[in-house]
Amino acid sequence: MNPLTLIEILKNHKTYIQTHNYPDPDAIASAFGLQYFLKQHGIDTCICYDGKVEKLSTKKMFDVFGIEVLASADLAQMTEKDYIITVDSQKHNANLTDFIGDEVACIDHHPTYISCEYQYKDVRIVGACASLIAEYFYKTDTEMSADVAAALAYGIKMDTADFIRGVTDLDIDMFAYVYKRADTDKIECMYHDVLELEDLKAYAAAINNIHIQDGAGFAVIPFDCPDALIAIISDFILSLDVVDISVIYAIRRDGIKFSVRSERKDIDAGALVKQALEGLGSGGGHKSMAGGFIPSDHMEAVSGQPTEWIERMFMRHINR
Image (tube, rainbow, N blue to C red):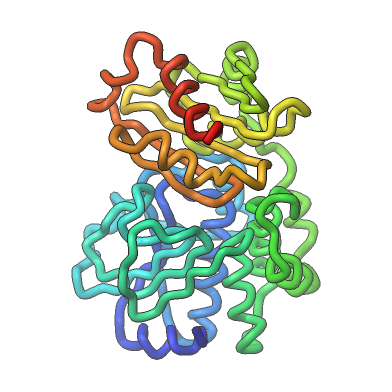
């Protein structure tokens, strides 16, 4: 769609840009870039989310790029007449809280699992949502600040794992476009001090509990662990030379959280986790990366020997 169509839809409406819960660098970069793009065309917006920011790299973006974000507790003034643009997620997804506002637009790079009608919809399967936002500036020749360009470049690099995961021609072209306009010192700054000491406990638990079966690496973190950290550890386990599918999960008070990665062309990570958890929880994502969750009220089905049950369920679908 023509991004200028979005401008016409939003005129004279109070507008929020909502990321998925527990936003990552790509989600924040996309929201920040879209906010600036809309501002250049006379539309003021607020960025918001539910949950909490877990990745240290995401928290650092707020300071480095001066990004202002509202948590759900700050949205008491939102009404059902206000407009919402969902970014890096889609309405009805398990990782997006349904706020009172009207979701009139969606910009996302994930597959659609539950269809929804929007006044403006831009859903394309690319490596990073930030690439879609960067293209808006490119297509409309809209001025871009050095901070916005740097944030978009960082978001693209992070969500494509430095151009080795789900990358498309658009990601490469848009990275080249924004990098030329970016404050590269700030991109470099984002790669320093992004691991907290407490994170090492989760790494140690995963390493101590890893079990590899026919190229699938399973590891349980037997304590509360943030979603973002589980995903980082899933990437870490996938880097082992004997692993081409990683299934990392944390047993928490609210349920069991999964992060799944796949390097196999015949195994779609999003479909795998959705099928493995069907009837007990929810899951989905990209071909190469996905997440899932079994809520606490369904955990009795996997009590007793949860690691054995989880491996059996995933291997059943992997072997198909």
